[in-house]
Structure formats: C-alpha cells, structure tokens
Image (cartoon, helix red, strand yellow):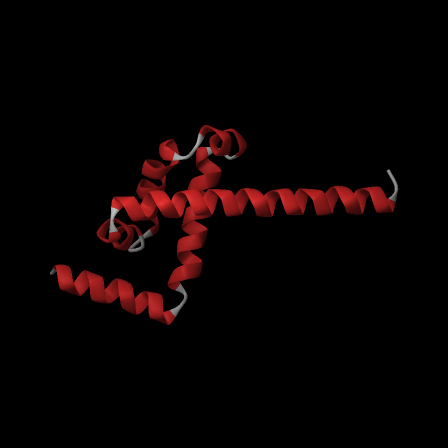
Length: 103
C-alpha cells in the first residue's frame, strides 16, 4: 500500500471515529437530560458514579450505535468526557453548588 493510500485510510478512519463520537455524544446527552440534572450531578462526582450512569445509558442508545461501540468503550468515553468537563472551574462550581443545595 502506498503512502497516499495509507493516508487516505487513516483520514477516513479519523473522520469515521469523529462522526461516531458525535453520534454517541448526541444520543447520550439527550438520554442524560431526560434522566434529570440531579442524576448528572451525581454522575460527575466520581468515576464509579459515572461508570454506573454510563451503564444505565448504554442500553438506551440506538442499536446502530451499540453495534459500533462496545459498552466498555462507551463507559470509558463517558469517564474521559467527565474528566474533561470537570477540569473547567465553572463546571466544578456548578456541581458543588448543586450538591450544597441538596444538603
């Protein structure tokens, strides 16, 4: 396989992965919003909570998405996404404020 063919193959895989993650994220966000803000806040409190939350969401994804991504990969994606979101101070403040309101 020539360099151009390899580059096209890699680019195609990258585009496919990006589209898949966008599709997964869109569906997961819609499902999570239906579950409620409090459940989202709880899920953001730790990796274990996010793992449980993601395992609850996965069966609700469309079969098309579930054919393309395993539950294990989905859970890891959700934990990674949580970590990225929680690095932002404004999100940390939102979660802390929501947790204080409930106490």
